[in-house]
Length: 142
Image 1 (spheres, rainbow, N blue to C red):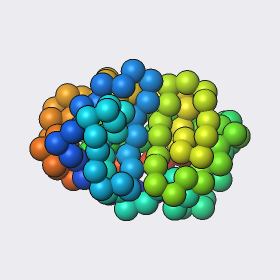
Image 2 (tube, rainbow, N blue to C red):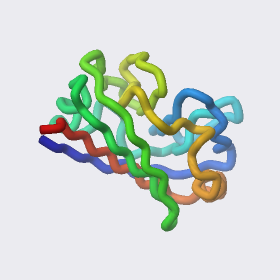
Image 3 (cartoon, one colour):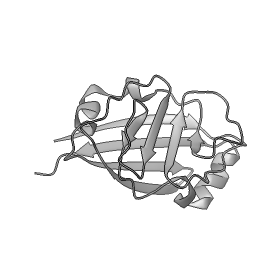
Image 4 (cartoon, helix red, strand yellow):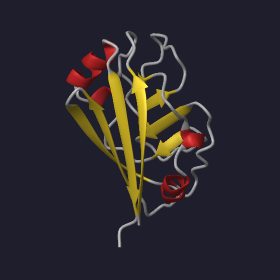
């Protein structure tokens, strides 16, 4: 079983990507310097708007979640897990976490990548306002 969704968002001059445990994209149009986990703004959907088939797989402890962050040919691949505790009901935010903490914004847990470990070339492009494509795929191993 597999499901996929694609989110489009934009970079922002305040993208710093220094957070040690998460990264986030949001539908909000702006970003303060304090938002050091946010890598994309003006996303075309929040957690609540993800494809229903994808949401069902994300909310399964067995799910392997592969997220591709792409900007102008520069890509970072993030491997995470799903969690039965995910509600995926936040209207504006999507958060990937290294920990197992879940809330309505959480898309995946146990992520092997966080804001500060994302390819710095990708972050520089985002700080220049480039478009970010976020591809999320979840699968249940056979």
